[in-house]
Amino acid sequence: MQATPDKQTVRELLELRRNNMLTANPEYQRGKVWTEAQKKKLVDSVLRGYPIPLIYLHHIDKKVGPFGRDDLEIIDGQQRLNALWEFGEGAWSLFDPIVDEEEARFPSFIKAVPCPWGGKDIHSLDPTIRQSFLDTPLSIVMIKTDEPNEARDLFIRLQAGMPLNSQEKRDAWPGDFTDYILRIGGKPGLAKYPGHDFFKSLVKVKSTDRGEIRQLAAQMAMIYFTRRESGGERLCSIDKDSVDTFYYKNLDFDAYSSGSKRYEDILKLIVQLLGDGKRKRLQGHEAIHLMLFVDSLFDSYTLSWTKKFATAFDLFRLQVITDTKREPVGEFYLKYGQWTRTATDRVDTITRRHEFFLQQMYEWTKPAMKDPNRIFGELEREIIYARDKKRCQVCDAEVLWADSEIHHVEMHSLGGKTSLENGALVHKKCHPKSATEVAAFASKWIAKLSAATISAVGIADPATAGSGSPQGAPPSTS
Image 1 (cartoon, rainbow, N blue to C red):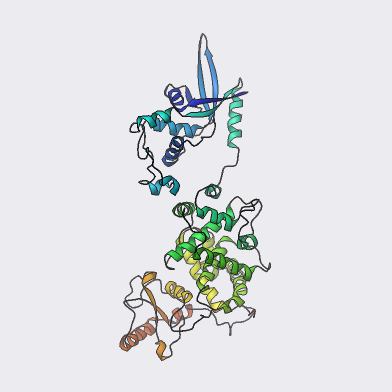
Image 2 (cartoon, rainbow, N blue to C red; image 1 turned 60 degrees about the vertical axis):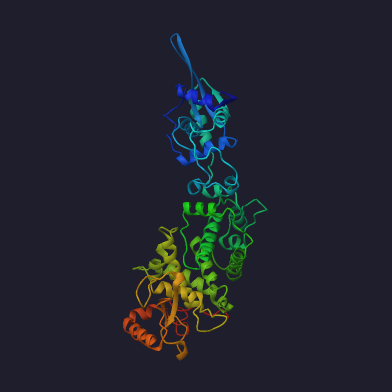
């Protein structure tokens, strides 16, 4: 086999294709697989002067009797050549970085400069730009061999490299969110990105990690910042497309904001509470829900809950395992365990799991507010919001988080406790205010609740629960 470096302009390659002298061998080449967006970005790269990877062509000298001709078969580069060919034929227009922002997802430094080819096809390009595009030289490796199978073997070897996975591609994206996740999630072998102790000691980064931990770090950060931006109202899906979109929309992320610092402090506190080496590594779903639980407690509650935190989490894990193996399966499997196995990256699944996790951990840790008063804390609001199915207990209409309030069924001024049992979700405008309205609501509430509803508000009181029962509270660690 002879391999000769060469240069061919875009124009020359298109002419070869137009004259059926540049083809792909369908016996071992795949068909067209690039999306239109990928093709547009390839041409955009050529116009920006970005280097294009090597294209490998098999030079075949064919002779039939007295006749002969030269052909070129594509060994590697078919998708790139197809993109150039379609644009050269006027098949589609290029992205405009501003107009097509949602689909194109160009970084801000590209959107900040003029793009004279944006939104144009080959025919509407400025003649100077079109000429420059067609005259762009591309690097070619010309292969000659008397054994056709060598070309196929070369194709196999060129494809045998391990392609970048989704997170490894995100690691190369511009923007401060990329750098933040590299620093938090860590990248083995790079001193610049050691990773937060949460991921190093609790989730435990492996030397062979190819981005799995950084992807989890990105997903957790997405959920945290989405929740803060919505005022605590919503979480978010964390599938591939959602993560990509978050990266794009946060190119100007502030890694040193108060919210970013608070997120790192939350992870640090969890390390202090669970970093004693007495349990196996955290699963991704466990890491997410632990972070969200501590996030809800971080600002308005005393640290009394930290004494029971590790034991409560260990008990939760044990109960999930126990209920999974039972016949029939138990509550912890039905309300949590099964949702770690299906559609795990969807917001409705994450929300379903967290509502159950939150309720159990709340009952077992019994957090106390720093300034006990008549106002329900963030954690109690979350639990009641989920328990009442996001519907107003006065008008029965759906309640948005920003429009939600928790009403004391028994008035606080008359001794009513700020507790889950005495709280009801209402709209701000529906919140009973006069003594008559409060009394009417209380009568309606008592009549509505069945024994099953009341028992579902919480689980057994730790003071009366058996110390060996998984349904009881964790033993005190104080």
